[in-house]
Image (cartoon, rainbow, N blue to C red; front, side):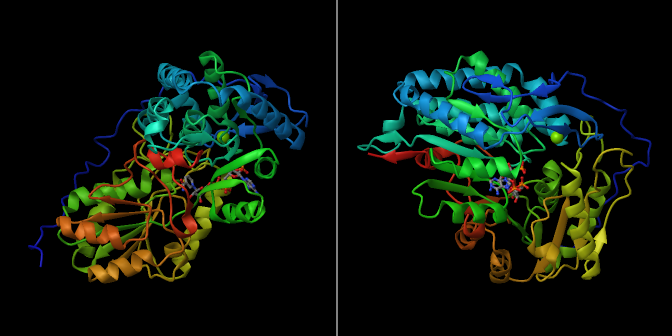
Length: 490
Ligand code: NAP
Ligand code: MG
């Protein structure tokens, strides 16, 4: 039994310690209108259609984005196939120089990219500034390092590129997901046709200007924008040697069905419903920070978010009271403010989905806890939310909410924790909090998840492969394993 604990003390000072607004002032340099980036230049779409990109921060229009139709996607593939002839034969050392240049240019323009990412997607500026942009640059640096050393990935065998790779990415980490996809593809000698998500195309289009500055040969990377139909045109194009998709499990399944029998290679990085498991011997205050970061980082728009908290029954009460207190000190609101912890929800549609699932949680009998917060009058916002008394059959315990909503369940024994944690269609990530190394090892062997964090959560590194089990997908991004998914052994 743990020692008797004194109740958590409230370190809140009413509104005496209110922070002053600290708006980020750097300019995002967003064009009024963007074309498609094909064969090294921006071109008007043959479809002649554009759609508006708005900011979830205040619902203001940011730009007009070209809508790529099938003939635009075809033009992108033709350019990529043409470029593949020389790029695939370009020595690794030369490919490495381009990747290195891209990484350096991203670092040079990091602040501008961070502001654009925050305006376009709604994530707090401190996250786009300290996580998304530096991590994107880190992926290009890391893969620059591999490009001339591929013979060491599989000693005695040669890694050859596949051809043109079609890539489709989601809206939660727009620039970072683009880096996860483009860097390994280029390092291994492939060329690319990529589509960002409809609501977050801007940093991908700004990235095109970095490719121009880096002097990347035309056609090696082509960026086409649009919604699901454009994605489908990328997936089904006959010139694609491989498809790499990150997004929802439903769309991933449809893609796998469409590709069956075509011979195209496939990587699927799909959804998750991670268990964050806290044992009674864990350092509780550290665990509380890990739980908060695990679910409220990027408003919970995180595939590997720790959205199911499994807490040992003996410490359920102190953990809940500490979490409720911590929740009160989270600052929700303007993502451009440097003090904001929880920014804007990415889109109206996502906000509605979160609201529906939270309503289901209440009607199915879970107990809701939300702090009082002043949300901005315009834009899409949702307060950070906890649910206690959640049972495994509740929708909020089964479905991916992809929002700032945590479901709290309890367990008594490690076996019960494992069984409950694995009781999901997903298998992307998990967290274990305990003082015992042996328990960490046992749990990480038994948990069916691609990543298991111990006494921490949401830690990423380009050297570490990331990917899922079960309905969270297959294939890995990052590390040596990620390179293998973009190459054939000859
Ligand atoms: P989504 O609806 O599946 O969309 C992902 C991408 O696919 C978007 O670019 C989307 O276009 C496009 N798309 C939609 N329908 C398509 C179709 N029929 N064929 C081809 N492409 C199509 O997912 P989302 O809502 O953007 O993203 C959230 C999901 O991504 C969550 O489930 C999350 O867990 C998952 N995710 C997984 C990882 C991972 O590494 N495992 C990482 C991040 C996110 P539009 O959006 O423009 O319509
Ligand atoms: Mg947007």
